[in-house]
Length: 268
Image (tube, rainbow, N blue to C red; front, side, top):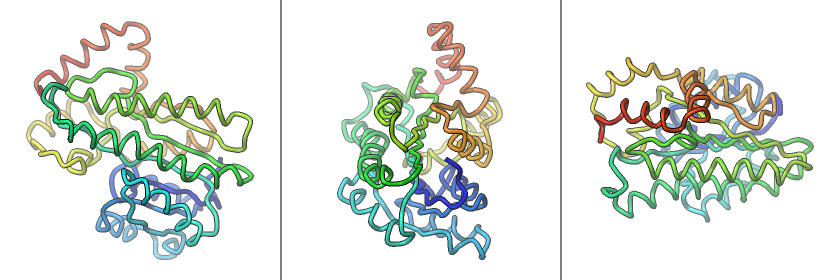
């Protein structure tokens, strides 16, 4: 689905990849409903958009883990823009870098509620409206962690693996409809996901990891995601690390798992 002239909902639009998706899409001529749980982040997103394009942007405070809040969201978008043509489910959090045995059930449920159920609520709430459009698109941001085991992020990975299979299943279910579905697998991207997940940031270790792993700039990740949507790709691997690890994990799961463990063992 081409972005120009389309009304597209972006969750997580107040920071990181979501914010850069808003920038990329609105510069392509799309009309954007940006959702986030933080008003301040949304306001910052809007402030960095050209004044003449701000009329094509609406801001919405939505807690995607709250089903009733999400179910009311489509009518808010339609009230603002008249219709809706696509959704990009970008909002998500990671877990603390600890083993499953050390996670509380509250921490586990929070990750699953936002990453998996939030995507489910958004998809089910908007799908009836998307099916009425001449062409429409659902883009779900999964993660490299959705196909590759990452120690210290097992529940996060489980939540993203669930999104992966739901997305691929929906692609098959909607194959004979006007709604296209794309699963996106980013690798390391330079965002503030740790802060947004409520985690303490070790700046020295964070800078060391950035230098070692060279995360993809968020604007480039957004560019690749929008390109995948416009090409109606079934799946897209964003970043050299995601592409490399997808190949390696298919070739030798054990080797790939050991490689990831060696890079992250010091976090556990």
